[in-house]
Image (cartoon, rainbow, N blue to C red):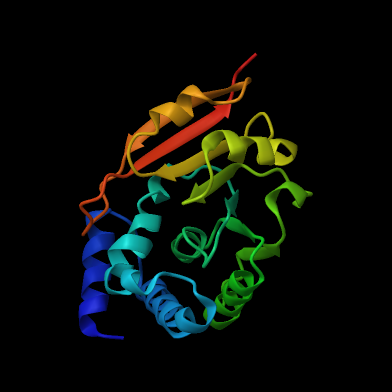
Length: 211
């Protein structure tokens, strides 16, 4: 791991005003190493994304940290563990469930969990509509997943009255918000500023309508 990667990561985390001790920083760097090592065999990220991995994936994932609520958080369509793994590293007091139907990607996430000693994450290799939780999920997160309407339809069985969806989007998704299923409403829209990225980023929070 190069010093420049460490410095870019430290600068970005500081810019986001997040708490990150040396152990957490080492875990994030270890996760970046694993992503690079496994990428060619497991096709976790596009090869053109590797030079901007810190800003495009790690800091982008961490930018939602101030908006997380509750103790049990599900990351749906987690892929290589983004945003769930970086968020779990910086929030050891919270529990994360990472759900993805791709076997290769869930094997990678399991390897990362073991190597980084992340006892606060559980990995589920299944389609979202088949996932069942015995505990109430406080918040569901998704990044580069499907439309808001499709995500909410698949989430219906585990989406309690108190649960909220945090969806990471690029441009403000006006059309998707207009097509929210009955019974759901936009509760927050936050323009994110991701250190080192020029791309537009919006965080959309959706919840059930109050009766």
